[in-house]
Length: 196
Length: 335
Image 1 (cartoon, each protein chain N blue to C red):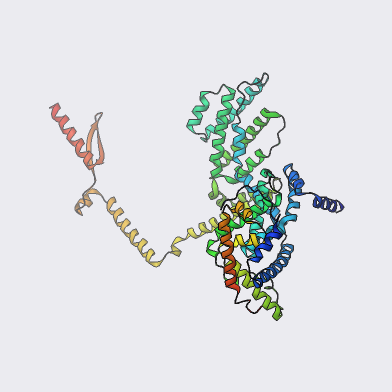
Image 2: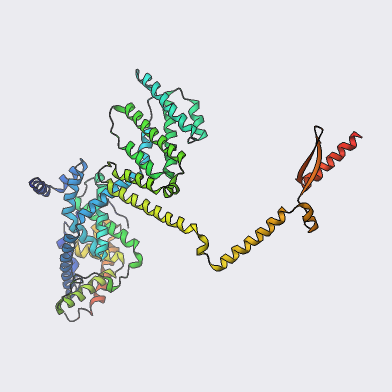
């Protein structure tokens, strides 16, 4: 037990570069476990916002780390580890969206809500749930490219140049995507939030 | 959309970009989006603490690794066998190769006897059996071909056999390892060939002898497999068991097929049976009866003299007519 704690503490103290080096030199489980613990939330966060459901996000987050495990030996470290991992996660989410083209327009009732399993809900909770559902549905109703560009820029704070480098689209196209995305969100949500 | 080489670090200027991004939205919208973001973050943290992503992930990784190893099993063996052998065998190794080569030849003879090696490969082997390097290259080809051939028919045993070969330690250099692997593979193949010879192969046999199959599966499951492969093989066994159960059910259904036939089909079968019976009976009737019924016989009896003895031949009508004509011509020419 003490040994485990020591190992955990020392593992948490290691840099990404050191963990990648250890992975490549054979301490695969040890190093990878640390990297997963460190980044699972951020990866999950990225794919969950793009995909809109926990089930899909679970699958894609796993797929991201499986790809990471398979490719980490070839990672040339010309970017930091998370940048590389982020690219994998967005790529995995894109792949998932391509496979689910038929589900582009998500039924508002199928969108997960934070309080759906709770029996006791106050009026405020119900209102909160309704609004969350509306926002989630509005984001999920965006075409995949607009949705991804919106999430990458609005939530993850990526510059157009960075998104362009990842998606292989011109910055002009991306600006148009972002502009259309926010216009659509505004249009979808203005009635819901007109009182606020 | 294709990814390119990154020349940036995610989030290096994210707070500045977020500020700019928000400016393009009305205040009420970015307030709601940000609020929703916080709710979602809380929800995600809760979800991750309940769902233990990394435990599932490591299971999945082990599963994938085992699956990849399983699917690519013949390849490492093939590569091992196809490793080019030295043109000149080191001094002192000649005797070893002589003995070993004899042993392998013996094994091949056994395999040949069971007709498991193609004629082309046999010929190839016969051409250069005395040059060890060539001999072994050919043998490797033979063995690879045999392995691939078996792989399609007997996955369970082959996997098991190859698994044991692929995981073998490398004790004393190239020749020892090579000979060891070949010997083991040959033994495994011999065993497989014997099983094939004694009993019908593939699933059919497994269905017929489920106990034997279960024992074999248990054997595979109980074997000390490399770390992480248990999950995959458990799943693999379960899939095969399920397949066998399915086939067993199919077999049961087929035992009494008439029970499940539609009444109209039953009548159809009865009618066909009646037609076949009448036709068959007619065909079996004596020629005299057929003639009286107005049915012309297809055969005709012809009497010929062979070495002074009268022999009656029952020939097809056309042949009998030809023979009669020949006999007539012969008789006329004698006169």
